[in-house]
Length: 162
Image (cartoon, rainbow, N blue to C red; front, side):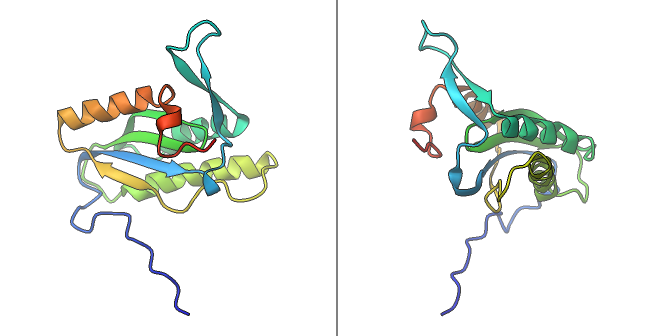
């Protein structure tokens, strides 16, 4: 029986080395909640929420910072590490041969290497990632608000797993 064909994740009509801003999401393997836990900011207030990162979540944060040192034309405008996924707004500042997928791949690879050195067994990340090309300032504002509100709306999130 032939294997099912995977849906192409990247837009075929877009050059990802172009200047631009991209909203990227990638998930842990099997959407396991290994990166953190969403908690209220205080016992008295249900208004604000934060993500308390696990050691693996901290490794993911560190891998984002480390990967940026290898890509001078890429910056991370905003990001959040959630219990089972990561959202990043990534800006490619100059047309170059550095593709968006190389940067995301390095973040995932660095965090996986750190995790395995620390004794984590198994696969940390799902294959590939989802991206959205930010089209204008309104789109950018909407995505930034989404990232910042993600902990508060965790149970409504498409990646939420009880």
